[in-house]
Image 1 (cartoon, rainbow, N blue to C red):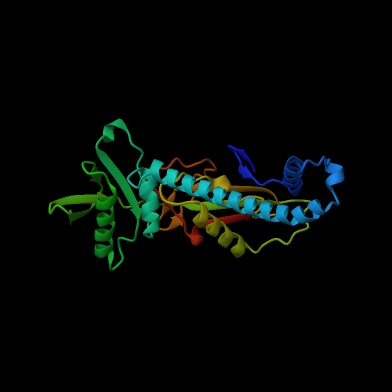
Image 2 (image 1 turned 180 degrees about the horizontal axis):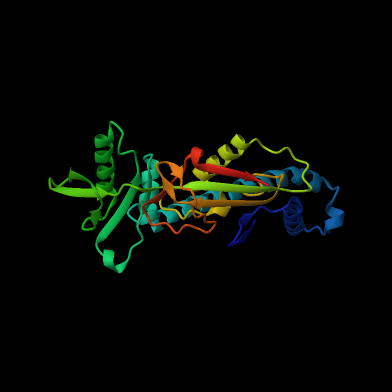
Length: 276
């Protein structure tokens, strides 16, 4: 069975295994079988079944090795990204059912950590939720690293000391969206209904965008979503007052460079569909 650093162990072919048997038979019994003359002999017939079993064992061995490599890769990834790093913190919050983001470290924030959690501060059980979030933060942040934010809970640690732990709530930015779809002159596809198009757009955004991420319009609706279209243009505006898009709003098709706590607030009622 061969081995390569990239692909691991590779099971031998039946032909290779039979060649090994042929060479050993010649050595053991003083015969002089060639590859061609060996075929059809009783030795060949007998050892062909053995070669199949031999190959099956090699296949199983290679599969075990592949799974072992995968296991080591997972363990190494966990070791290289412990829970108290920003990606580890975000993943731990996700496991616990929260969407979180962490501010990138800069010199001015030395010794501090800023965590933002997307949660409903107006919910009836928010006090319990806030305590649960800060308790989680106390368990996954490095001792001596001071947490920042407006949402504060006093947490008693295992040594009996009480410390304040904090997190930020999202900076929710109400936005309007304008989706312009130009129908292809070559179109032979059924054009979706306006409400279905808007619902698809919102579904795409929910799946691909979240707290602290840049808002990248080109990612949320494209020609794959509208096979009848010649071009698709998604724009956003933060000129929103009282839940409505302002008259004369300025529209942007560029990427919104988000801070760690920014979260666009998308509302189906503030989506404008323009079909050309």
